[in-house]
Image (cartoon, rainbow, N blue to C red; front, side, top):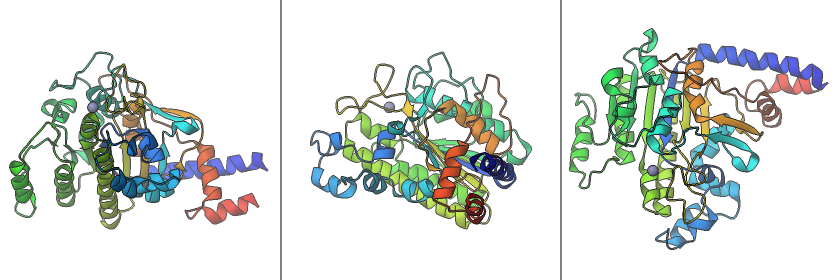
Length: 381
Ligand SMILES: [Zn+2]
């Protein structure tokens, strides 16, 4: 029976894969700086959340994010991720199940991490977290050079180094980063957002994520970009300050931004049914209470990341539980393949990731959520 099942199901899978390239035309790439896989899959860490050195009000933060049950706990921290993406999309990187996502650069800091995500290429040369123009071509720039996407690509980030990572000067991409002012068009709320940006008392290299999201959301509604990058940064900021409570609060806030964005996307005729969301991080961090605040070459766990996908053509694999190794440098070509392109650059580009067929099918049979349910069930019988 199994032997008969495979070719039929393979056909279904490839039909879906072929269909997706026709349907999916828009992409959002979202990054959450230095947000660990441990919190994504296990929720708040038991070794940190009750520690008064890392959390100002341990009882209040526990009320918000703690539960003995890991599944309840992770849902409390990232409700959109676990109620929508884990049901309709795919989540990679639960290392407790040997499903791994990794960076391949040696340095495990942000610039090399984002470079890997966006160019599909690991730079052997060290790029410090400084305003240095990136020589490598990125996927947004590539899309912006394609006929259907020209002038329809945009990037927003909290961290003010992105104009250099994306080489705004060469790539000509519109990149709004840090406390950079927005164009004040009459029909948008950008005047208000700019006033707030100018009034922020302690401006650092990382803008409030709330302002980054408001800026991106406004642009998306008014311009309908076909490829959008949104880079959130406050999770890493609070982690470095050893403030686990605020790290959790920021992650939870980003989860709500993603829920808001996805709801908008699914109810807007331009995006509805033609859009994919890819969410990931630029690096991991230390595993212990004494090391979680840092990341880098010498900090174990810094190369361990995760990846989430949601969209019309992404089959509902949920939390991928099979043994597997995915690399962050595969994301750029994966984005290209979703949009039916082959990403070519002035450097080598890693191949796109492949979906684990067996896991997807197993999930479909056990938890049917699509219109393929009756067909699969009848095949089973
Ligand atoms: Zn950092």
